[in-house]
Amino acid sequence: MGKSAADEMILSYNDVVLRRSDLEILSGPYFLNDRIIEFYFSILSSSRPSQDILLVSPSIAFWITNCPDVNDLKDFLEPLKLPDKNLVVFPVNNNDDVSLAEGGSHWSLLAYYRSADVFVHHDSNRQMNKRHAMKLYKSVVGYIRGSSSVGNDKYIECVETPQQINGYDCGLYVTATARTICSWYENSESKNDKDLWFSAVKDQVTPLAVSELRKEILRLIKDLMVKK
Image (cartoon, one colour):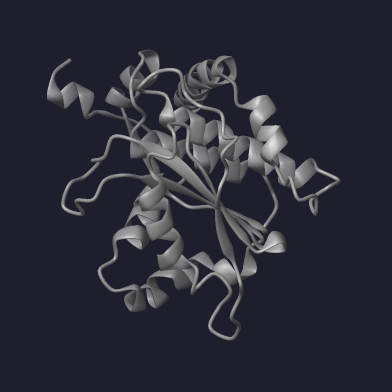
């Protein structure tokens, strides 16, 4: 496929623009890019009416992580209304080069749950992104409650996070885990349980479920392309 054909816009969904190359990524065993993760996060947000949940786009999460001066984040974060959210999900990427678009080689997920005063890192490859997740946590923790209050929000690694069985499905583990956490938040009757959503993620985010999610996202895009 030539460069011009690969770059052809095939779908605009909310603020996400998908290219023909994204279909190729989803059709084969390839590493998910920012656009596909942002698209699925947008799908999750649109399908859930709760104003308590925020799924942060990869580009915004990346800038929060890599902003040279954390004090400069105040105006940038204000539109997210973080103090109004009870559940916030951030994708984490291990790209350290802010000048490199769509860099990095691994995705993981950092979830903030206000009711438990906790940030939880889910990494499907042996905590490979721990340093980057901790960097994101340190950047955003001072803003999560607003300027008028100081919290005691801790950071933990979920060591029971399901592990990927190949070198390319990390982005799908992020999207599958995000879906499971959002469903747990909306449907669980035990939100104050110390286990939080950990059991749900362990049970539902399986290699088979991840493989099916790749197909599901591809079908969603193709269905929306027909409807546009």
